[in-house]
Length: 280
Image 1 (tube, one colour):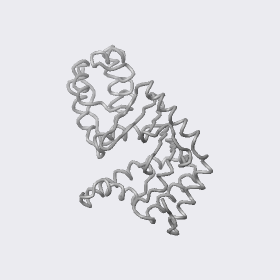
Image 2 (cartoon, helix red, strand yellow):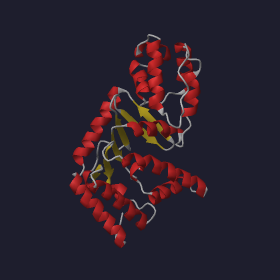
Image 3 (cartoon, one colour):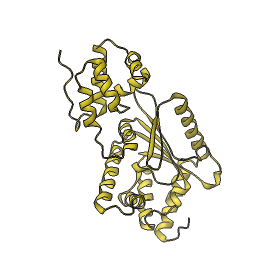
Image 4 (cartoon, one colour):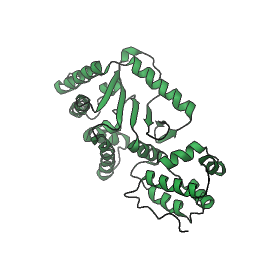
């Protein structure tokens, strides 16, 4: 019997290769746990691959082809789907973000990428890569703006961000860029597209002092947590870790200003930038 047909990566993201994996596994008469055992992964991990919330890495693809007798199908398509416009440490998180039903994020220093304006993103990337060519910076900005298109949907995903007050006060790109960036935030808030809370300096020590945090929820798969550091990032699915991170986010929500108070503060700081009165 012929194996699954090759996918067109341009129109068939991980969710489709996951469906092919489920089909091939069921044809082989294996449960998710039984397929995971020789790969030294859990049945829930196989379920996440099938649901498209995790990327199929090449090492697993090769073994799966051997176990399921799929004649190199998953290896070939894994190589094609691995091509990403995002850095390696972030690519899997960006793909999961695109199919999440809810994204809950704490930002310690910067406006989250999904909420950045072009000029704010450009200033961030230029700070990261001071010697990069304009073309390289342009490509990075374009990729970030493309990610943000998922907010074009009027309701999904739910995006709930807790921003440290430092996000508002750190002048990225100059007063004009900051004013525009904060006005973009307030426009999204007033359209009821996102929920934003500000964690004020006055709150003191809090649950996420170690850095930023992102949780992604899905319709048919467990919640994932993404943590990152310079040029590093990791998508986590360990239930105990994800539960702990969810509690951290809940504590941040409890300590932050209300959405209404946060909107008023963001608008006030934006106005200060417009008038040149902002002081960190």
